[in-house]
Image (cartoon, rainbow over all chains, first blue to last red; front, side, top):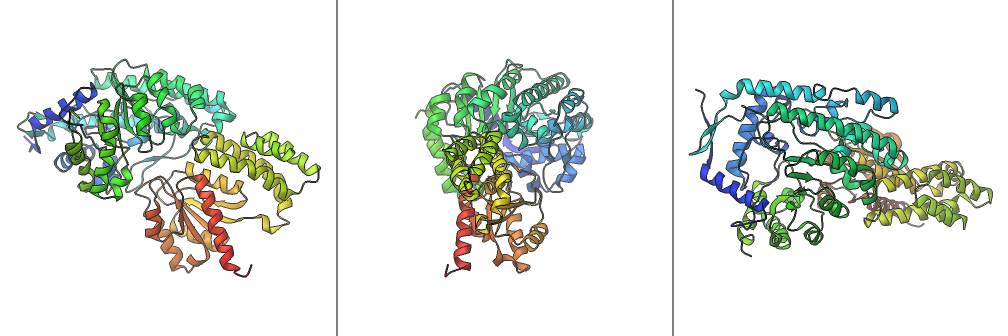
Length: 384
Length: 219
């Protein structure tokens, strides 16, 4: 029997966190506003001393690192995160945001000391669209590698038993998640066409962009359907992002992108969660009314809090939006003040979970991250 | 009248119309400099202001920048005869380890649209390559972009490389990108920081004016 990896957080505490987050997602009053900092493996791998090169080339290193990273996070960061399995939070075939573009023919660059990135687009002509249609999205590029890593993780899962204090033993590698989330039709299409080129093309070649989005959306859905079957996901909840779409006007977003966002979103009839970083004031109403999102996850720090409260408060769970640059370069006092501002503007709607807006930069001081929780404990107690 | 129409066509990003109106204006013996200043740049200034105010978005700005290029391609040979119309030369690039280029491209387009000569080194540019480009092209300004907190430290490396090569004093360094701040610019000894593309254009004009004033104090 291998040594059990003990995470020094009491199991009852984990249950309490889950209850707090679940209640917030139902717009119920909890004891306080929950806090769930978004800390990804770009931050965590250097902390535990794993080289990115090793992480992306060996499924055993990936699985072990994820468990140790989540153990560090759980023991050092003040958070209401309550589990360490699933995409983004451990036991996951993690190739970051490169999987979809890679599976659809883009070249991926693996730096020595960072996460993988996608190199520019290859879809320029109608003939390229026809080639794109022929791609087997499940077995190509990094998606094929995800499946191989998943099987390898399952084979070694028993080497890595994990336990919270006083809780049952579990195996994060037993059924690791594939990347069952999406970067979104527009952002994936941008990778294929070119990140700058697509913004010119929505005006110059809108029909071409629409056809590209249509093919991309079908490919995304095909991959997601595969994930649900392969991993036997027991629900129809879904989370996706579409960061680059934030740079579009409401008119262009509505005319060109929204039909495909809807196709993706309404493929799922469970809870849906959208992430869109940056300045999205101009799209909030469309996201709430037409996409009918249940959660707005990690919304950007530039979003106007009064506006988002008016548009989404009380009907969309709001997860955000402390400025991550303040977390990275400010002081705990500044982070606390910023968190307090979010709480004072949005907590009375209920359905608020404090997070950075979005993604805590590598190297951010832990005391700054923890200042978000300290603010919630001090200013975020219900009833208000 | 025709210059107002030109400004309007540029604002709406209609490249063909800009080409036709520029040709017509030249045929009417309006000087290239006046077409640039009262037509193209007036339209581009409006684009910049509205983009900064959140009233225009990236596709519209890119369309206007492309229309600007269409007009400039006709004017450039004529303007070249008058060196005073070139605002300055800029070398720009995204620092090593970073492949993001939307912001950098937009800044390059707006600078070029405003009359700067832009040499775009692309993405993932090493400090040595920036240093070589400064030596080779002798730019007035150097623009460094980074989207990632992990690649921001490349910016002081570029400045250090310029220092070591004895090139730092001949070029103003401006920096930008989502995680970059004025505080960071001050800390690493950059000459300026801009939070967005229109602000980058304003900064470039300001730095260049400062440069010219200090190089020609009597002028």
